[in-house]
Length: 426
Length: 163
Image 1 (spheres, helix red, strand yellow):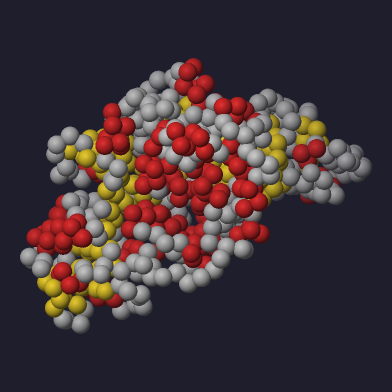
Image 2 (image 1 turned 90 degrees about the horizontal axis):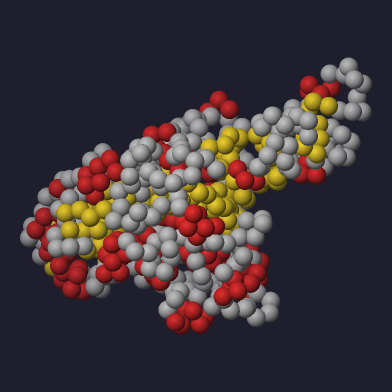
């Protein structure tokens, strides 16, 4: 359980809140690059960390992310015309460049300097891989650009999807940290999902349904090791990294692409799951990408607004017959929706004062503790971890080790992302 | 994908049930303290941590120290208690180790917990050290380990599990 004030501290991410300020020390995914596909393409509404913004790609290819509303009369600039080097409000023609600077106010005399004093609040936004990233914090504290391996591998080796999740970000993140639910909720998918099936690790998973866990403090967050029996005298380890504040990776299976998530707060009752797959040493195959687009693996089949087709308005297309047949454990199809359906069922912001956590929830307990400490420390002037390149060059690992070996020692540098080096997987 | 699945009937229950408005109708009642935790320090340094934690307000948690071979525990008040008696009505044991001593006691307690179906957790309080004797002694017997744990991890774990 968490006391109410700590639950509020961790779940509120708007401007001025402790956890909101913590998030504002990190580059965050705000759009898929496909959402701004061309110069002068239509503007896109963005809501992140409880701030309403509009994103553009101008005539020269510059990305801009600024206050959604015109400085004149508060019209949404989503209605704006993105053309000839800026975004023009259709109401009275005020025009802004990609930094939010007003560059034309037609009602003013041509020689007026009025524009110079009108600037919409804006944030830097950059493209890394197939995602657009924004930094909403103090410009003086802007960290280096994101260095996550999925966004630094060559083109063709990575794929990202996004999915609306209609609950607080922390509920979603905690699902990513909680390895103990996998055996139950996703057990039916290990051999049916094309992005998981066929690995030796699946056999270990199915052969030992009661894993032991080790939660290891790391510089950028936590490493959560789940240990299962393997051959005599050996353990099968699945190691999940969590990097502050909202990045998790799933341990790999066989030579399948490696996957993970960013859980990005939209507001306090909704978040985006940015889910990625990549392979460190080869291009994704057409079959793999087709499966990802179809909602297999950690992805979901979505509508044009990135809301899952199976959502709470249609009871997630609950299929009790498939559940009875053993094809799915919960009756919901697909790993992503199996998670989000349950996490959304908790309500927009779950009341953690009512929880009954158990010892195997220690990863969640520790992550909350680290988040709270980081948010409070930032208020005292201590900069957080997780936004440095060395924190981000991380991988998940699946490995078989001798029983008397520490998993941290055993995996050695396998947790460190190195260009062209294959992932460590079973 | 959607065509293969059953068609939901009528207005969605989930859409209605997951609103903040509906959350207000969740029934409110006191939760019984189901977590009957024993916290056992495995060495003198761990005993200091456990003693400080024991001085806080807890539900049914009880706090002990132990030395090899581990058949007898000592309360923070200095009273000796048979391990079997201390575990009698427990469902969680948290082992705290700093220097990895009293490995035999870890084995004794671990075996006793296993036959009784008691959940075991271990805190390896070795700041800065990812591997240690303490880790290897605890690993076979703790279903979950925190490595390296900090002193306040014990407090957090106990609070979070309503000990």
